[in-house]
Image: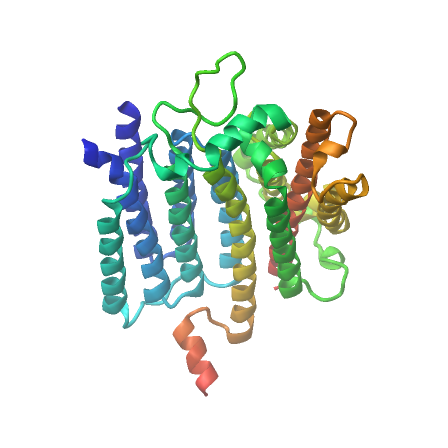
Length: 329
Length: 118
């Protein structure tokens, strides 16, 4: 009961934030509100028992995406022109659609109804078979990495392609990244501000350490490659914001990041092909070792590592691509 | 009381349409992308709402507690990957906006169309 009241409060707050985002003509505050929006929705996901999703949303939505949007604002403009025309029509279309969808909601099962169709079909099978076939406690990881490994491979390649796309759009074409024109590290960053420097120095190691924990503990608790990738990149981005781009690139250069992107995707595909070579199907980890369960564990650890490498590489490459573009101007 | 169980399904269309309204009514390209992110977050909320089961907990199996109910893991898997794909596509969109801004000197849709018409 308390949970429902708390959730309703948060959802109402979410709607207010959303209206604030749309109404705000100052894009800087819109982006900041969007970060808040992500944090609120992450808490709601957590209340709705989706710990893995909440972790990802908090790291990605409130962390990485805010930084990317601010980077884009720095490269364009942070004032929105006064909107003209079309507002009434848009409002009408949006309201009517919302009303129809709300009307349709009366046919939905109530929140938490055990008889809801979504709980009847394949989900109980996953909960039942995970201990027998894969034997890792986190069912989300088991489905993500093993039962539905093929889907996840597809998602990984979407991220991979998006990273390449951003590089095509924003890199300067010299093929050498932004190394040639980086100014000295001292000139950039927030190093001359006391509070960000002290707080950041305290936070960065723990964010990265937590990211690594989430990466390698993902079979047992909430976590896995996607969350870890987002967390580690958030840590490195924080480091780059405080100490300057050049310092962050000294830790993980463009070349290393490109290597990580490719290595992660290759590792995932390689584990899949190893299944074929050992006489079974693509992404069947049971045949990797003599014991099928141990094979599943090895396969999940390896592909989660691949996911973590690619996600970290892509997110950081995107960040550096935006930052390098800003320095050129 | 019974109706409060539908509150998530009412917030979902409101958020969805707030996002869509931002996309339709605003000419600023970054504002459109922000609207798209909100639209996307509303869909995530719909899926995660469906995973909840009364008396359930996060789908991380507890040894020695066979009676425990677990929430549905499947929507969580779908949304988990969708969030990360979402940020990658948002970054791609922002990169396109940056290039548009460099070429046209503006990110307002109507001004860009005006320049194209000339």
